[in-house]
Image 1: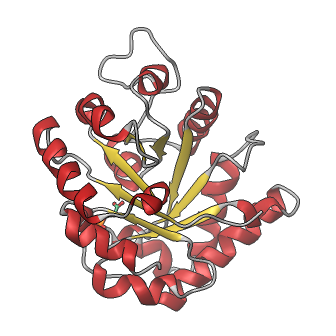
Image 2: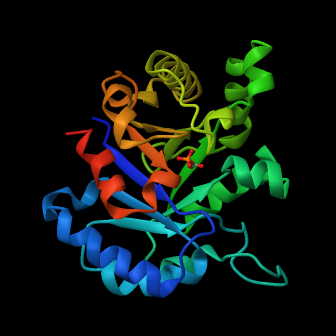
Length: 249
Ligand code: PGA
């Protein structure tokens, strides 16, 4: 099975429903319909309903930046996968480094969220990546392997899964991994997936994230194991986000 090119936007805690709505109006003026299925948008939960009206008749995918691993109950402040599905979401971001470092999300919680997302027919985009300290200590592969092994323990459905490799030191810093460095990590991630799931690693799209911009996207995408991008800052404007997509054509 061939891997799919995906260009995903992570708006983080930016934009409310009315800004989201004008963003999509502008976005759809520049994007050809046939490219719709390459795009994903991860929005603040409060924008999801507004996004639904503009995205539901397109092939663009979208979702929340986090879910909880229960659908309802006394979990103040969390998002329900079932409700995300109700408002049309197709995907969900899981284990973003900001969730891990600022909100204490463990690999164990990430794993529960992945399974819960799949059970509720949402495709999880699992984010992994090493800190600068870990890279400098030569620990990158060990960190990635641990995040994959523990995050995917008991997860059998690799077809409904996307991985985003985001070196923490490259997120929002303007420091992008070199294409070779990124590809090396992607290649390693793929080999771990293949090891965990008898050769299935090849069907999983692996996105690179961390200071991706229109200027560096083409070179990164030219690497064999990079199937697309997860874009933070540069996704906040429709034109720069679209230019990143153009680099994959
Ligand atoms: P960035 O963020 O593109 O602003 O570095 C990427 C991310 O956090 O997903």
